[in-house]
Length: 336
Image 1 (cartoon, rainbow, N blue to C red):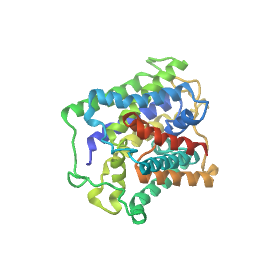
Image 2: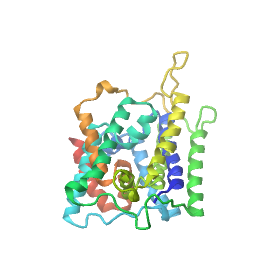
Image 3: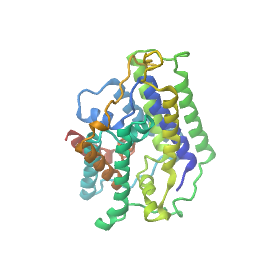
Image 4: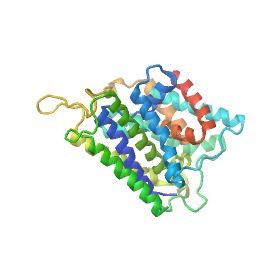
């Protein structure tokens, strides 16, 4: 169902976590690269560990305080067919995000808000591929990909309870206040590795809560967003609000503060908690066939399953058996 309140408040948490990591730690919130580091590379940093730990903690916090906001996942890996399918989808996403240099977090949420032409191209490719896959794959496979809503048309509005609203609103307000409290004039944390790791964990928690509140952690809700070409009754427009309240504020603050750019005196101000910036510097000139093929592969995996790396981490906490199989496929794909 269309959840404008849930999604808007969750998107503010996505903004808070991703933009906070940028301005305070000087890093882009690229979940696919962090996950790839954890699974297949030995050079994982303390900050990567902290972000991933925060993502893994978020489902437990929701389960503890407001379990009604946890997604209801379908049964997973109950047969060899589902095991092979889950492995294959994890492989597609792993290979795609490695060669396409990012996913919905790094390219769509962070890249577009930084006005990266390369991220805009990648987002256009994988989003279009996912849309066409969800729309036309049933013609080839004979199986329905986009699930219907049993309570009526998926575009009907569903509002949170008073308790759910209070929890989500409190989470969003506290997250944004925490970001503004860590500033040059009222620094709660110092420029130390432990401080950067502490904020990285907080950013991971914020982002994980945002995924759960928006519905991006629910694959059925994600895939229903692609239904507008074929079946409006199955169309859930909720995720459009992620662009409005997730990307929009990040774009505004990026244009207002221009992090990582030289000021009028030719100096570059350092991030709040780091000594220097660690930002992607590749441009459209660096786009090659592997980049395009990677974005297409990720779009295929995303369109078939509604799962990308961030939601996969959250789901692995709630469905460990599914997580082991999907992550195995992702790790193999990320090595190639």
